[in-house]
Amino acid sequence: MSALLEVEDLRVAFDTPAGVVEAVRGLSFTLGRERLGIVGESGSGKTMTGRAILRLVQPPGRVSARRLAFDGQELLTLPERRLRALRGRRLAMVMQDPKYSLNPVMSVGRQLTEGLRRRERLSRAEARRRALAMLEAVQIRDPERVYRAFPHELSGGMGQRVMIAMMLIPEPDLLIADEPTSALDVTVEAEVLKILDGLVRERGLGLIFISHDLPLVSRFCDRVLVMYAGRVVEELKAAELERARHPYTRGLLRCLPRVGGPRGDLATLTRDPAWAEQGAE
Image 1 (cartoon, one colour):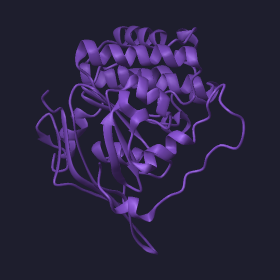
Image 2 (cartoon, helix red, strand yellow; image 1 turned 90 degrees about the horizontal axis):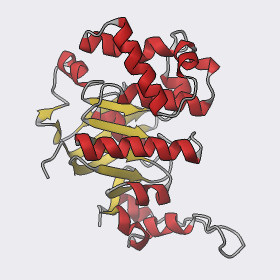
Image 3 (cartoon, helix red, strand yellow; image 1 turned 120 degrees about the vertical axis):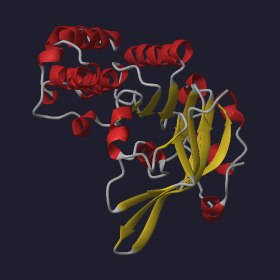
Image 4 (cartoon, one colour; image 1 turned 180 degrees about the vertical axis):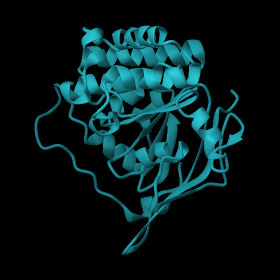
């Protein structure tokens, strides 16, 4: 499988009054046209990894890498104009919280169609048709109403579906999905995962799926990276997640509640400072 994305020694650092804080430290992986899950606790560097790939980390953050290449193009040295041509059309990211990602003073329809009309020179009517079709695809029952609505008029789950629709309309080659189903009920979640799965299988989409939901990742993804304190501590096939060997991954799995299992206190995770300095197993 040819690599769509190559990441070697990716680092994201922030200058703070207390010194330099590294949010991502020496991350390396390749992504083909597959579903790659990234899991770990809040603060482990999952979201920052996605933002760094799209060069969305703002000062005082600093991003460096030996290699950060998409389809053979080095992203860190790519001129901003060429990078902007890739974002949206070939590279996209579904942000975790639509409240902070959707423009509050623009209607949903305008936000869905603005990129299409600029990039693909579509007519207003054709852009509207494609936007409404994608709203239907993510299980929005009244797409016409949502198309005319403003973000504050939507529930959290509906806003999340709008964000997913916005990123999927241009049919990108690489999609980074940051907790894309966290605000969705199980029925809509299943439909959204079906759409993403179809894009991977039929169009060869490369998908980075960032999540806290280990059972979901084990069912949906092909491979999994487990992150702790900015590093990958374990990489394994998603179907083998239950057989993980690293004590951090094992600890995360033990903390999951089991339906029908024995009652009592949930397990807690005991961390070893050495994990932050070890590479992937």
